[in-house]
Image 1 (cartoon, rainbow over the protein chains, first blue to last red):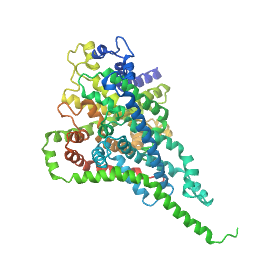
Image 2: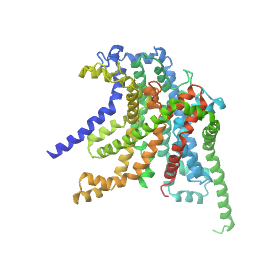
Image 3: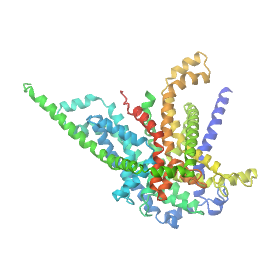
Length: 278
Length: 291
């Protein structure tokens, strides 16, 4: 009896939590399979569920979605490029700071951390201005560069934390055997850091895939923008075809959700692990 | 065996030189990104921010004053409410039950999906006329004109706080779960042997172990909440009637209206609030595992 009551109390928490969490996502899904009338009637479940919205999106048969595939590809390209470049920049930097103990490395990392902590929306305006003076506005390079700048600080920090955990003796032994710095990097460091690098690459990739503000500031041509900005265009209309937007939005949301679930154990905790300890 | 004594020393210094060279080369890509994307823009922004007239114009703009008040309320309510809920939910999620693990997997969805489709989903759902929420209020309770979730200024502001919490709650709950799981279980066993009730266990074991993490996380969340553009912009656009802007959306609004100086100025006025927190956080985070 007591056990039964305990489960009941837990359910009393679980049910509101689930409703709260899932309602907007459920709503997203319901609209994506609704026709225009069911949508405007605010039905909990559409009268005639339909996959037509998805057909329209796939075939790009609406002027808001004329560049759907193009924009999906842009999202993909920008995310992958950000992931790879961040990985390259951050792995090198973390190795230089943590293992080679390069002079000024720690200061550099603290400055990077400060960048990471300043709200991205506040950096957006100066960055936009700078992109203008570099002549990079409306190029995907500008967005990729911005995303690398936003993703690198956390990446470097996580990789540095991970590097510090590798035993010093490994380096010493390799140096005794006459290894150069670059051999140390290639033969000792990289193989041991692989798991952290995967997490960091994915972190940067998702950051870029999900980004809206920077994409919308830095890019304007409909053919160049990622899907997030393409979907944001619906905002300008009063009678937007929201069911189409939701169908497209669902397709846009699925890849990051899948990736998060595959790597969810690794994606959290790094950030405040220092705080948990102290 | 009989190698000359000088040789190893020479090797060592060769290695030191090699190390310094490669260290500099490998740090260079980030230094370059940092210079181009952070140092130059920030310096340029500060230089533009030296224009005294923009601050006069800023403080003369009633929307700005309203925005500052909004931002403070938004920060205070959103962060505290979020952490109170996260603290309680983390206590729920550490219960060892298979079904609770499933609930947790669903609970982190808002964190896992991008803002744009989900916040726009909120926006459609909360539409006062044909949104699902008010339509359902009508069908279930016969309420003809449901609340103007996005058209009434106060309700629109509250809605954007809720959307912000919806999006960021899972992450902080996960952090606090991690913190709770790090507490040694035998403390609780000893306490319950001594007859401590649930509240006493929380008061004397959980809270003292969690306090540092709670404070650090709250501070970090404050900084990020200050920079939350999406929850406000995508839900209400700062409306109705520009009454619900926060600093993050107002700066961008000025900029989009070709008033870059005001955009920069509205960011700079937030710096006295942000920089001390950034400073403290950098100090905390840069403590390595062995420091």
